[in-house]
Image (cartoon, rainbow over all chains, first blue to last red; front, side, top):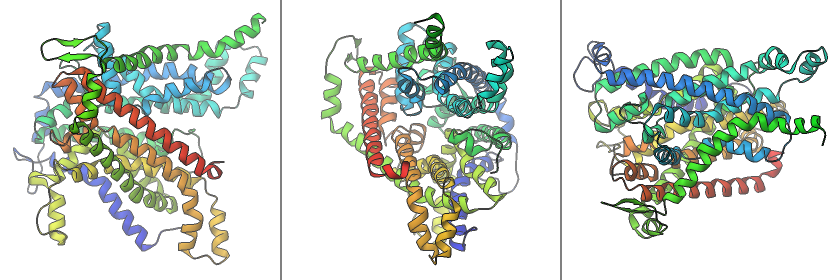
Length: 270
Length: 290
């Protein structure tokens, strides 16, 4: 019972068209030579890609997004590794509740988180700062990092650690030379997924971003709300191209389905 | 308790400590503050008054504008979930039966969009739905399915199509993961005993895919009900859902207490639906999950 019939493949083709159509359309329209939204029927032009350079608000927002993604994913991984080791190895009171709390940003609507952060940051006086953005992004991307680190911590063979300790290695050495290398695939894939989640986040960020500190998706969203023109299409096409490149690398390294399902990253057949 | 045992008991707390402090301080406290905020009073000229009144909740409960908007959010989420099941589950099965390298390539194409910015994907639908670039209507007219162009922008249909596109990969992922656990020899056994393809699909594959379908449905429903960017761009200012309404109250009207009430109600309704659905699923399919 392998292989698909004609009907299955016809359905599959339509499904793939459905999935790709909006993404492809953005990339094609971005090459229009006209001053309005249209398909580049006669010639393809880089006019609107060159135009991005004249709009510093997009360029600045792009770099802000990169910094925000790097910082928040790094912090969330640094918090996830010890937390995942504790959850994987110890049985302590409140373990289930704490795990649920750490994963809760996946289920709480991001609008609610955005409102809660806006209220909280304004009250404690860090409203509209980059610090506020970093804190909120750490919270939102931590579940993605935690799930992948946890999966590799649970699947780890502890006898290797015990061997290191019995041979006289200190706790610090054991962690650095044995534990960390063993969970490295989970840590790296968790970091990558956390970064991209931070880079894409718009719903929560739109509440706490201000014109001075804003991210690329928020800038694009606010721009589209006013009007849709070829400029925002070419910005979107750049974002899509960057994400696809990142995605193909991630898929080669870890397998996209494992990354998203939050299961253990291992070298086995696909 | 000896010192060693005490250190042993303290170890997990030291390890989860930093993340726990952050989450209590920056998740639980702000959400509690938001709940409290929903009971404050707001005036055009007075701003937020820190009093404890039920005004906002009464307004949300009595004004038909809010019930209509919540009903619309619910309706869109149910239809999107149904569409995701109907499209995503068969696609997961097709992917499951594919051979390498096609399997890997198409998994990447189907699941990859989850990592592409929601704003960029929704922009694609806005281009396909309206203006000079409205290919959807052009294709439907060409195929003779319709005789007049349909309206997709600023309609529920448009929001549903775009949201289904944004969320269906979660369904594929969930069903695909469930199908991976099936022992292919059971299929072969059924075929060797004379079962037709349809019988195998209906009696062997589908029952084992059900946990994946239900798990995926809960995820898709929750994300559809709390979706923001897609309904904001496709639905526009006229077609409000819960999250875009809360956004408007916060950033345009500046009536934070009322916006907080809408958001808290969305959170409570969603939590109740998800917990209820989980209960039913666990009771009904307890044997499948074991």
